[in-house]
Image (cartoon, rainbow, N blue to C red; front, side, top):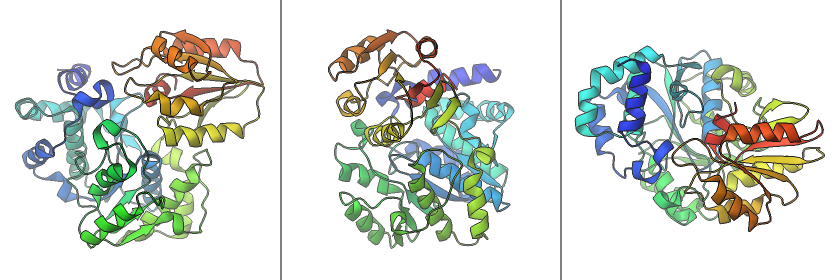
Length: 402
């Protein structure tokens, strides 16, 4: 198989949460552990920081990677999902894994992957860990895919565990209440490994403290720190993520990282890691902003940020996935706005007709479009220079326009 055929095989033959949703979710680490054994336990050959949480874990992971790169270390970075290219998920010092490496890994292990019936995510985690071990990274930042306790990444024993915050997302897998979700996220807390919690939330604080005590893991809350650092990532909400990243760096032993390096790392996140889709300004006049926020807490923060902008009229290019609880997110959006409802180009994408009809119940009026591209083009045609166009609702909507 060539590279494209290999990707098609990975995407199509095996369950992929990014495209399929619930059917691709496995509540079991058996497959991941089996693959680890097949690969010679690569996760034991490099140091790591494990980053989980509902919102901000991607940005925090990139901040950590950028800071460690500025300190001169060889840094692996594993994140999900990807926006444009599969290789975005696996990077070393900002450079994506080569297509050749992906091809050779699948070719070498295809028989095992097929007979073991590994999911898309399981094999991707194995590929990342194998690559980081082979390239002898000094440390890797590993972002949790979904949840924590049973996530495929949770076979590592990191130097520090990080949980950014807890919100209601993926409730069909993780539980319907914040404490239930916190229990799943707390599953990345390991024996005697320091854990940093980004935000001190009364509803879940006791869950983390109990788990940390059971694991004899030193626990701290980043929100207790008074320090404020600047970052090149736009959006006021990044201040919480910078605090979390800095708190995690300070818990890291055996690495020399000065305050000056931390400041440089946080100011060069995009340059060092190529992060996209976080309050990203695509153009001016009209100003076009995209953001991957997709759940109630994330959208609440981003929509508050939008209120601080100066504009004549606001246009929302909005699409979501089919398992999104619209009654939780649609009330957050303003009624006085132009809406362009669209379907992201994945099987999980919610039909634009359904989204339009549901939005009408919350006073959100607009046209429907069969694709993100067409919706965005119409928004650009209708907006004048003093307007703002916001593109979002789903990571997959943003992926189609950047």
